[in-house]
Image: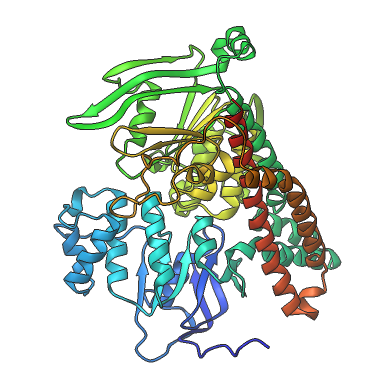
Amino acid sequence: MSPPRPEPIFTLESIGLKNGAGWLFQGLSLTLDARDRVALIGRNGAGKSTLLKIIDGSIEPDQGRRALAGRLKIGRLEQDPPMGDFEALEDYVLAGGAQPHEVAALADQIGLDLARPAATASGGERRRAALVRVLAEAPDLLLLDEPTNHLDIGAIEWLENWLDRSRCALVVISHDRAFLTRLTKNCLWLDRGMLRRAEVGFGGFDAWSEAVTAEEERTAQRLDTKLRAEEHWLQRGVTARRKRNMGRLSKLMDLRETRRSLDRGPTSARIATESSDPGSKILIDAKGISLAFGDRAILNDFSLRIRKGDRIGIVGPNGAGKSTLIKLLLGQIAPDSGTITRSAALAPTIIDQHRQRLKGRTVREVLADGGEWIEVNGSKKHIAGYLKEYLFDPGVIDAAAETLSGGEQSRLLLAREFATPSNLMVLDEPTNDLDMETLDLIEEVIGDYAGTVVLVSHDRAFLDRVVTMIVALDGTGKVEVSVGGWSDWVARQAPTAAATKGGRISAATPASAPRKAGKLSYKDARELAELPARIAALGKDIAAHETALADPDLYAKNPPRFAALTTELGSLRETLEAAELRWLELAQMEEQLAG
């Protein structure tokens, strides 16, 4: 028998909020208790940020009741924290009412210079300052709106550890799957003005939401309301994308294996491949490049060969030189020494999500310069159909682009740039401000893209799901190149690797002592041999759980069983992904030892 639920510390009852002539919410209710760790999930524009503002009292609802237990202290991190007229970041942070010694301690741990002028602070510095301010206030209920945006991976991991130790209740909006999976134990799904709750962490969200969606579609079919089913598909996004995740993972593993085979040495096959069509196979060849700004080294004797089909993830602390590396590779700046050769056929497109190009323009003008058609991969598509592919209602065609939500604006820019003919796609923090459906879509577009992809990201799960190679900068000039995703790179670092000040993971952390040429240890060889059968068994278990959850009557007749299966399915999927990545790591170790 499960323990009784604690008394709520916060309640919303039948909340309604008008949105123009209609309602954004109506009849929305929510209770939170002191031990809740909640992921708030929903599409861009669903009202997630607005709901957080209602919870903390910044917005008064048009209907309903808001109730707090005792002197509940609520802290909210905004997406774009206003710095106002504060002279320095320290002035902004201390204005929250926290003690100076607590502020100084948190700033030191997260690597924030409090003396930095607020007017010239970067997006990452402003976000760190906002985090220090809200954490130092020690709230009972902490509301975080995209807390990982503009943070490097080390800072994200520091925040995870801090929140994991904290005793406050937590509601978080984030696109960072790894962050949500580690920290949350409950899910709130805001969908078409309705708020659903499941007592599962984010790891179980996909299975639960897909089961709810499937039941809704069956109900719609029984009522013979085809229009409603189509509207649901548009609003929810194509659920089948998630079911293709495993197919994309298999393709990604093949790409990683191909990329690894090209770096095994100057075999005759490799030489033949490169010499037969060097223009199309090698897009950029950087040899021995170095660059410094004053006394600070950015790159030191760095070499990288970028081939057709590569998916390269550039990682490192903020300020390590990730954007500088991209500018070097594209020829926007020159190195101090070394050479960079680019294919004459190189045709890059850079997706940096700058929204200046949206000002004063309609969606139609952004996509098709005011026309009806857009050319995508050599074929013409009507913009209404193309908008559907990017999860837009075609009714927004003539809407002002600036009236879209921040995430929708980012999605519109991605739709425009993905249609631009190119053989090299460069993406700078492509996951910021996007919902889960759009991230699934981007993963699919990248997976189907015939050219080469270079992206800068701090999203660990995204890197694991799309890249074939990690290029890790540490800010001292050292760069480490590793085939695989983020988890593969981390696994190759020393288990006792210490983070640098501020929680940053250093790309210069020495790898574990290399083995002498020979064979895998008995333990590793046995694990490698047993993993394929384990992966197959996990796949069968996942299929069995999905079949059980597809029962339309299960949720109504046996909610505990439904919840248990959902939790187990999330765990099985995580275990399967870990097993596949471990198999990839051991297979690579075996290849390296063999020669």
